[in-house]
Image (cartoon, rainbow, N blue to C red; front, side):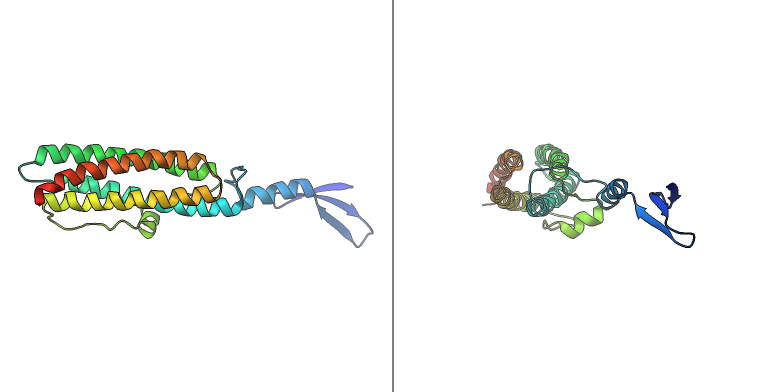
Length: 199
């Protein structure tokens, strides 16, 4: 028996006659190579494939929304004006920091359960449900009202993602979501109180 190397695969070769060469892939090595080729980022998990798919879908949508809301909050922070500039400017900076702090734990949680997460700004824009605001000028109280509504909607979507996790008996992701819901409700509360000035 001779060993031949071809295309990075090892083959056990056996000459059966002068005219025929029987080549059998070395089953263990070939299987390992195929698995690495097909799933190079495979993460072991006891969750089912269906659970990983559903939770990953829900959490990637949340991640895209958080990135979009983070950037909108920073946009309004940078373009704030008016007599309450300092207070609103600092509040939105604090809220943006809180949103950005959510992104890495969300993405890492997706990877921990064997899913794949967002890869680019384009991926975020295709996935986000939060509407962008590219207006050249937005009244300060309109900014506050829009962010209050966006945060309220984010809390609703976080609860929906929590339900998806519960359906698949994933207990770790909901424990993170519960903290994010509380933070999101706090942001909504602060923004809504400021919005009262409009009434």
